[in-house]
Image (cartoon, rainbow, N blue to C red; front, top):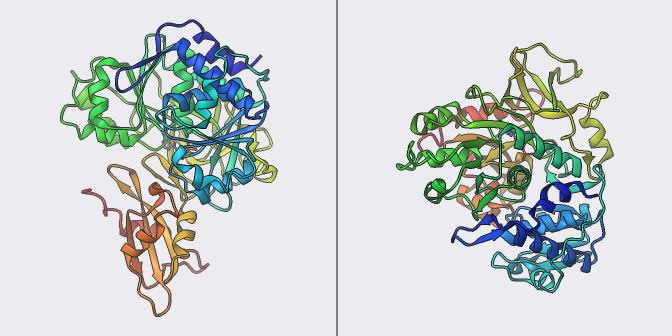
Length: 502
Ligand code: AMP
């Protein structure tokens, strides 16, 4: 038994219909994809991966990268995807913490990552199907030989940074991933007739698990795109039935003059998540296309938690109802006591989707769960009398820019290390394209002058692009309260409209 293999991959056997459709029109049938996955699984085993070993992967999005994920499932490995934007120093932390048996890098990055991956076997895989892993896989049998795995065994380790201290690896089991895919495929009525426009990254739960696992489970197909390009999505909509996106996708689609009822006539479902969808975006999209975007809410540690219904109202601003089998409550953040409908508090969740804990962080894990097994999400929300959830904001000051999480402290620390900088404070500011943009406030060290352009230039190569500030403002001192805490709300208020016309 290997529950994910048995439910998602085994049914591809002998399937002559496409599973993947590439932007140039080439297709990869279900059977072809299964064979690629099997070769990847055998290649991982040949490289020394045993069931339960971590396989860290920092590669460009491609059909082979997806086959590597499927191959890791088959090999019984724990898949650890990493954003290709992470620098070698950032990757080094994850590798030291997770101790993978194999690291798969883009051929162009192999030299850069060699030192960080010294304790592992380093293989390469390029977007064009080149690299040492691709060569190793080419010589392997195409017959699946899935490793035995139980429902409670780990299938993936996804890092989700904390606002304070170190990044945490969320341990996701086979049952976590499968139960979530089953709930979503049913709720969103995915079938073998579906063709999903896949423009999300595959290093994050949304593109990797929600999009891919749901499509696999339903027996559908995906148009696999390297990234999001609004004009390209518009061109492909007549060949597709569904799109899963972050709010930025929808604001960018709205900027396309061709977005109208006719252009979206073949589509049956538009899903949004990973960051709040502005009610204005929901309304504008409905007015132009006649489609009410279906917003859902989830996180790395839990997969999806709530969703608006397929049939019935999808009110803007609401993230909908708990998924089947998932319990959600809004509780007093301090005591954990459940609150009445309408009251704002901590969103807490319990169910088969909830992760097993943080990798090698027993203390953090214990702190994140209530005594009765509910996971404390860190999100604040309220529930109406019918059980619909609304996310009010994040308890901590997490910034979500273009659907990706940016932790202010990490950016502040990088800025503070720059010459001539005394200290800094980083906040998220509303941005029509990215949802939120990173803005840094900096204070120069005594006698020095701070140059905003130099701050941005100084972060190049130290932080992934999406974490770098879009604007830097120089202050004589940071606003603080009597307890010495920096007043971030004040900073945000002062630049709320900075990108209003961007
Ligand atoms: P991640 O772990 O990267 O998936 O980020 C999870 C966080 O994204 C959640 O804890 C929420 O703060 C936020 N999030 C995800 N979906 C939504 C949504 N539909 N509305 C508001 N926030 C969301």
